[in-house]
Image 1 (cartoon, rainbow, N blue to C red):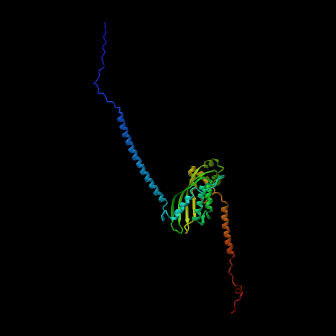
Image 2 (cartoon, rainbow, N blue to C red; image 1 turned 90 degrees about the vertical axis):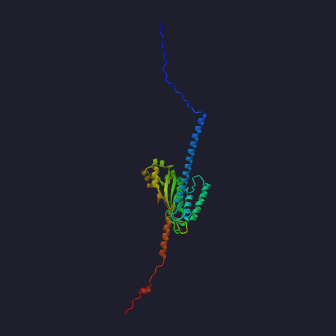
Image 3 (cartoon, rainbow, N blue to C red; image 1 turned 180 degrees about the horizontal axis):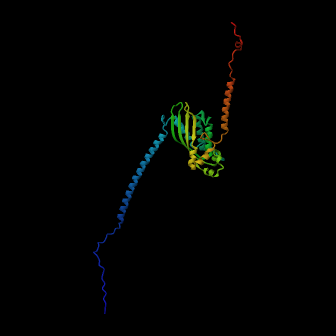
Length: 308
């Protein structure tokens, strides 16, 4: 007996229309790429233009701020007092040239030194007062110490204002920043009391410190500098870089710093200045002692009064 297998085909639904291929042709892809590229380029151009305008605005703001900082309440920036102070900061921006051991002074340093001396000779009065001492000697002494005791130094003017505009006694106030880098010599000459603290010394060597400095310039009737006061904010600077008020106080506490700006030990020059003042006072006292005294005639004093 033969068995016949009946195979039934699966029931198919209605035929769906064949989808078109979604793959883009090279031409279409190129057009899309160029379109996107143009859109990106246009957007980038607008962004660059906005940045350019922003830079122009910032530059205008910078110039305005610069002019404001150097603007006097009474005098224009072209005043001789403002120019003198600006010239001082320009000439002493990097301190004074000092000769390292075994090395000479470069030509540029000699030129700068010559200009500094020329400025002091022409723009500073003979009886100029700085640090309680007459003359420019103490000012140069301090500049030499600051320059020699640090690896690097930069003194930059930040703000200037003519406080008193009277030509007979003008006063200019200036804020500045003094940036220095510590060396071993800095610690030995200014902070010798912490030499025992090896850990602190290692932190200090090579350290960059930024001091805020207040400056006041006093002019005489001849338009020359008559006196100069300056104050350095040591404590705030050390607190900032060391991150500890305790370490900052330890560093400043017994430091060889006088009058908030003068560094190093009192040397023979200061002693000579004090001796000179004492000698001047002694000479004045002797001169007064030698002056003749007024006397009353002895005859008139001794004559008897007539009897009535």
